[in-house]
Image 1 (tube, rainbow, N blue to C red):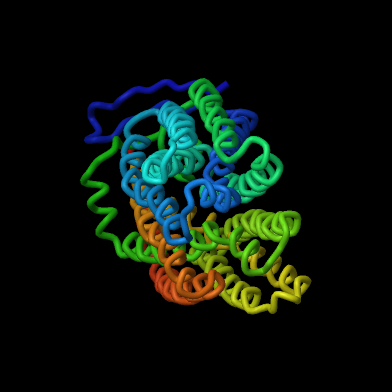
Image 2: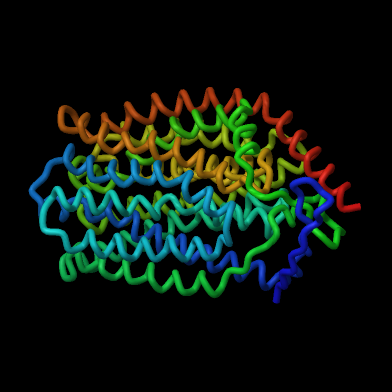
Length: 446
């Protein structure tokens, strides 16, 4: 069992000397399991909107453009709340704040399941974006439980939740949407949020921020500093964060468009029945899950040898995804086997960027503001991608979903790749800067 004894050193300006928590391997992995379950069940709830799109559209008698507004509302709200969650996680015990997020997840999902009109549904689904922005605390906790050369793999395990949640959501929707209806399904997933709130409140213990940094190895105490707006201001002035912000804005845009409309594309334009829709969408999810673990592990391995290692993996993955997803979209409807093969290859590259970008952000950010840093990047991800479902919907109304996805993916990923290459060139400077900051803190510890 980990213990937490905290003392302050009044002679050190702004610094706190915190007793290092004694953590067993079992304790570390129990926290990973709890965070994974939270993210898995939350992603199941969040991604259900995809396979439930058609019955929801039928209930409210709306078209693709109107449904695109539903997707966009939650993303815009999430973009607003990302920095708020980040600030809360950096100021208070992260397990407690995660429990609050899970409670909000349950409540907002329940409310969205009972509203009778389209307007109210838009408003209540938008409110589900509040908890969608609550992941910075989970990533920050991981950075204190695991060192820099192990974080990519752990983060990739947590990010498996998006793909497994997508599969679980598909299975739940396909199996029960004709019996329970989409409202009944949301009742179930909302209840799971309340359960996870209790689990995280009692199951996650706080650690001193920065405990796992290599400079603190062998020390009895961890030298850390409290959250500071001055540190955040300095963070915002760094070119690395500015480029990360812009890169994520463009990079996430296509993924959100795909996640929002892929099920309907398979149903209406590729003319697949419900069984084959599950196979095709499930194949993409499975390959994406494999992709994340491979990318995180490979990123950690290369980071041990090269400071640019994580970003090299990310660039390779984006280019691979862009090429094979485009080939997949342009496969004739009659060539199902070719479509599935190209989809599997595209899916393999799907997650090469995600775990490595989260780890890269931690490689250049002080421990006491890591949640805020993730929150700032989350604004870019959500505000940028918030437009994607609506833009894709409007393009589809005048053209096709295939054309909408192709236009969005080729344009946004191209810009994102250029920005990532620039980041790859400049990243070593900020990595060295953080290591110097942590070295000086360790010297204060004696």
